[in-house]
Image (cartoon, rainbow, N blue to C red):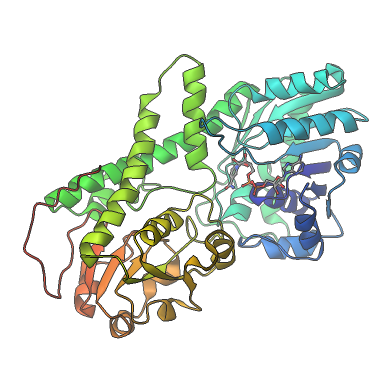
Length: 468
Ligand code: NAD
């Protein structure tokens, strides 16, 4: 099938490359000319496993990049909208990029198209797209609007796309429903995974994904409710971690105990410094705003957001407590991306922690395997950028672990101890056990677990953190 993808961002680029991998002819369009030029030169722009391989495989053959939206629409039967939907001041989703894209599609329409809404949008957006198309001169019979939310996770985006748990399609016409099944047929009949050179399936991939044909409203609601639910799981375990910290319980064992109940599951149940990224924060607040517009006060979502904010405040308080005074101290930071295996720093809790510490006049020396460049664009020269984890901690008063990169869980702790001025590690991702830290002679503070104080323990005080 001929497909146009509007937006060469984290979702659009991965979707375009993966659709080419499935045998479709794809043009990926962006208004950002620089991005298009980079992609055209063969640079993948984002850090994502397998993306460079499939871009190299299809670029110039079945996959093209362009800023000419009109031409891309002309040549395509399916037009996928994958533009950003950031939060606006009031927390609602800013749908202006979706509206602009819709208007441009309407102006370019030359034959019947299936317009696929892949951006995460509030329920009933497909109806707005439909109306906007008509207001911009199209006849309702010239197009179908389909909701097909994207569930990929940054870091495993390519395999999430090619081996999904489920494909959700919300449409109002038989024709659109049939074409969408064709778009994904290779994922449904197993022919993609069987093909030579296929990207390997993750071990936990579903043998056949669930394919749900439904209404656009249901499909849109599924996406927002999914993200809100996942954010809720994270906030739930973080709220429990506060009780664990205050009572001497161990949140890691609590997590294993809770998660092994099949009804609950282990995933998204790790205590830490809270969720971030370009999706959860904005999607939870947009979902809350939609609930309010439907006349219901979804208070649970407010609590999910509050717990998330408190978790960060509590972590900074933990740093302060471990260091006694933070002003003028040199703090090594490992991890800048909002999660591991990505270079994305949008709404990264790590960046928020750093900003707080800079406010308090700390010196920060940081390292991340993928997110240095994007962090530099945000924080400029306010911090020092280290070439590797160990040079970040040279002569540091404390080490902070803020992203759960695998390489940060296998540090040579004796070397760490030798490099640092004070033997203090504050771990926002619970990557180490108390025994490992005790053996290395490091004072260790983590989330929801008793502290390890091998070097000059302070007299015990009730550990009840108060948020102000
Ligand atoms: P992004 O900001 O990385 O990319 C959006 C791209 O769209 C930008 O490159 C921008 O220049 C381009 N754009 C804006 N207006 C355009 C137009 N009229 N025509 C062509 N291009 C245009 O955003 P993203 O992370 O890829 O997210 C896109 C959407 O997908 C959002 O709604 C997001 O919530 C959703 N989503 C994101 C993820 C994720 O992990 N990032 C996962 C699932 C869903």
